[in-house]
Amino acid sequence: MLIGLCTSAIASAKPVASAALDYVEENVQSFLAPEAPVSEFDQRLSQASACARNIVAANCFLPGALKCTGPKIDEIRILAYAGEAFRRARRTGIDTIVFGSGGARALVDGFSPAQASEQFVSLLTKLGPIAARHDVTLVVEPLNRGECNFINTLDEGAEIVRRVDHPNIRLLADLFHMLRNDETPDAIRRHGDLLAHTHIAEKETRSAPGVKGDDFRPFLTALRAAGYDRRMSLECGFGNLAAELTESLVALRRQLNDVGY
Image (cartoon, rainbow, N blue to C red; front, top):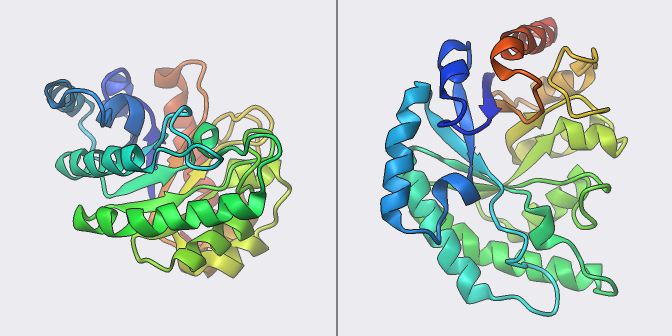
């Protein structure tokens, strides 16, 4: 299992470079910034080399104002945005983009969840081939009910992914969101064949592993049983990243080792 960190490769370059991390997970909107001039992206890409880690994934796919559900969807803009995001991802070495984007996909009051599902499946069906052309996998991230009102559980995310049925549209398991939703590790066992990425943070305050002492072993055991052995990104808060990151990595790797990773 490769362990990474969701962070800015530029702003966090020094602590990342000195930590026992395998990779960095960046941000589509702020790092790839698909609608900003490519010259600005070139500059960020150069500066990011200071972190001395490969940037292999990126989250925060769509900005909240670029709605992908509801009565007003600018699909032409979304597809153009995605195409440029995937192009810049490939240049960076990013092969996984996380489609959480709670603001963009949240349902407005009174809008039918069934209709939103049809819209989302239709969009992903169009995004899959575009992602494939750039060797990118787009992973659907279920979000906890406190953050979004659409696609909350692994079961719901899996249903969408199976309907799309494209190899470049896969599923993400975020253990923080699963814990907040009171989901069980059985959901991972049911849908392990779809998983292409994972996130982790502790339940109460989205702290890093080891801070509150959350036991992730039941979920890690389920991931191992499902044959998942790709990446796990820490998507959590730190009071002092440089001081706390190493301890968190030790705590997580201890639990991974305990279940046989």
